[in-house]
Length: 262
Image (cartoon, rainbow, N blue to C red):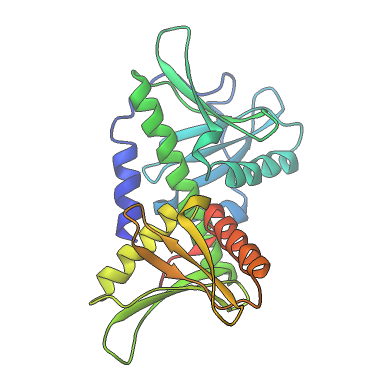
């Protein structure tokens, strides 16, 4: 979607080219695994063998700028597992840690839940630029995960025109089940904007509310920051089932493994 491209261009507008990301790895010719090839809009992972005989990966932006460099791995298979860890952890902003380098500039590390460093950025002239760079990496990885979901038949958003002439969206799980549905919008642009709002608000538990009907069934809805309802679930047999459904949808949206509408 155009919105994603705009975010990526913005996030890297302030980047200043500086010293290499990792010593001993800059003159090696990378070889790209087939599973890492994605469109330039999403960036690209490359794995390669360094001069020290160890294996590394880096993440390239759409303009082929190197924006994240890995630590050393003993094998190519281990480096590819590191890439999988980036895809899991880079979708959460709290996993990026901005630090000050000895030369007074700034950089960021992407860390796993156990505190292990998965990747390191180049250096930036200001802390704000480093934060923008981290946001850019998050956007690149998120875009790749959306593309992979589309390629593998995973979860996806769909937009359609209802019998009333309004535009709607559904969030479908990988099994095709509709897990979140929208209200009507006057045009497709409105429905697409609502999907962006779901991606923004759907990762936060407090934006959801579970409700029970007079018949004992239950459902949940997702609200935007202004309190507007942007998505409603199916009906569940009980409050506990609705709660589990809510947790599943929130986890799915947070993973970014949901394809954009075609």
